[in-house]
Image 1 (cartoon, helix red, strand yellow):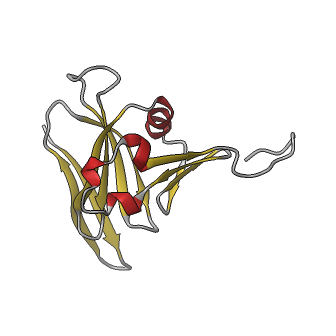
Image 2 (tube, helix red, strand yellow):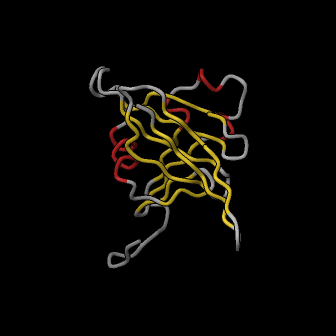
Length: 139
């Protein structure tokens, strides 16, 4: 069983289909994905059911220009997992925006030669209450 993610480039009278990602692992399932149009990257949250619960979610980042995986890491932070799984965020410029909070994906660390050495806490920065809001204001 394979899971394919395909990108379509559309023009007025034609289209081009490009295979972006193929998931070859039979026991790994894509839970959610989102596209950073600004940085031309796509993120995937996948689950590997046969691994230890709580440590069975994988974050994958693919560069859409080169169609290559630029970063993969198992993640376990409940806040990050819940946000990625729900899909209730805007993914722009390496930032996940939701409510009055932001999770920054450190593209600078991911693009470095030794990116596999960084931990989940180093790759993802959390910012809360980014705007000073009055009691009745909401984002």
